Amino acid sequence: MIRVLIERHIAETLEAAYEERSRKILQQAVSAPGFISGETLVDAHDPNHRLTLANWRSEADWDRWFNSDERRELMLEVQPMMDQDERVTVLHQS
Image 1: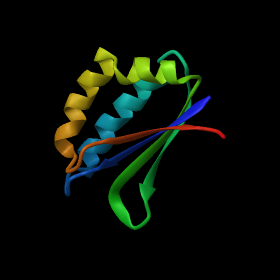
Image 2 (image 1 turned 90 degrees about the vertical axis):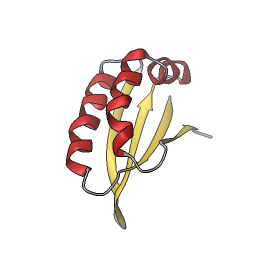
Image 3 (image 1 turned 30 degrees about the vertical axis):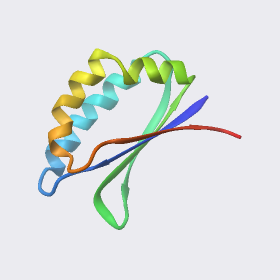
Image 4 (image 1 turned 135 degrees about the vertical axis):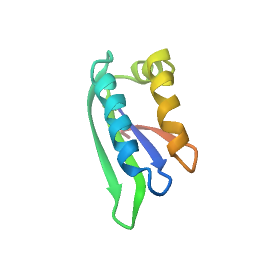
């Protein structure tokens, strides 16, 4: 199993629109092969900083979802709402 940390910073006043669209991404990820679970967190000191921590069966499963046309299309709706590039970190247990 791997964990994937996705960090996004939302532009001011676009939080509600972002929440709606980011839920669509998570709903689609849940049905992707290899997805185990995920949770989204809000930075306690910066409410526009969002973190998603997802558990995937393997890095190959994550890569397949990350590079899928489906995710790419969904991200086209979310990217204009972010004021920084998305940061993705793949984590393995040591």
